[in-house]
Amino acid sequence: MGEAVGVRIGLADVPALERGVSLLGSGGGGDTVTAAALLRARLGAGHQAALTPVDEVAVDAQVVPIGVIGATAVFAEKLPSGAEFRAAIAAIERWTGRSTDALVSIEVGGLNGVVPLVVGGQLGLPVVDADLSGRGVPRLDQLSLAAAGRGLTPVVLAEPGGQVLLLAEATSTEVERTARAFLAGSGGWAVLALAPIPASELAECAIPGTVSSAISLGGQALSTDPEDLAEATGGRVLGQGRVVEVSRRPGPTGFAQGSATVLDHRTRSLLRVEMENEYLFAMRDGEPVASTPDVLAVLDHRTGVPVQCDVIRQGVEVAVLQLPAAAFWTDPRRLPVLAPRAFGIDSDPILLEVR
Image 1 (cartoon, rainbow, N blue to C red):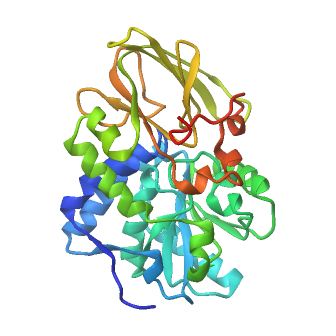
Image 2: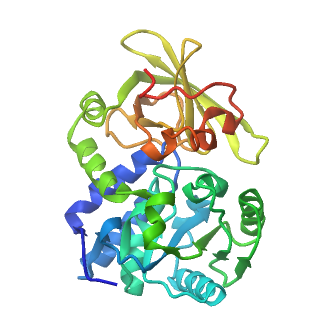
């Protein structure tokens, strides 16, 4: 493919990238600190990282979606060697008979917004400025490919111990179930690679511009307070105050569920945020006020750092933001995939556009 490069990423851009993808994780998405450290190490050693816009990728290029799935908290304890990504891409190439010309992230929210930049540099492959989520999503059957009706198979999973699993044919729901079973016996995380997508079809099934947008979002978040960030992004602050209660319980899908309740200092109202792997739904004094697929982000009041679902604790001072979802998810044909009822919450979506 051509040599076009849209956005070069330097060491100075990493804090904004890390903050942006962490915000888009909506309380999930995994360990951005470790992913950012890997990217800094590569850039510090003199290597380059860049993003290629979708419309600058050669139309006949084959773009492979990649990412890390599973218990990403373990990612920091068992770092990738790089062999996992090579093995996953090689297996998908052998099965499909197509070579890989570029990479695209499966999920911009969280560590997968950063990792493909590291891998692309290691493998000498361009990274497309797009992803298959536009935010953090908990399940593989909620990727944009599945929402667009394309299906996910063939799928390759490669784990740090050397096991490689190829799933040739399955529904998107079966892919999700099989992947979780594989992860349970393979050290907690694995690299996922999907079949190459012709670049000419990316705009139909991926969400363009998301990684560069994450850098812009993160830059704004680093330099402004929550109110200004909300205004600059078309979002809103749902509440600011102290976390007075956190509850957790096992969920029917295998993911832990729970809620965090914030006592708003300004209004003295109670803002309750329901969560699974991500923050999903917010109620003020029992009245629904915001929901997925909009991004709900909880920020530490002192540092501005996004607080993930698995570490939010009673007593922390926070600001809760609602940021607009990618337009892909507000399309009525795709909205049900990430709407509250997809997570067992009996409510219509409550989005910024609807207010």
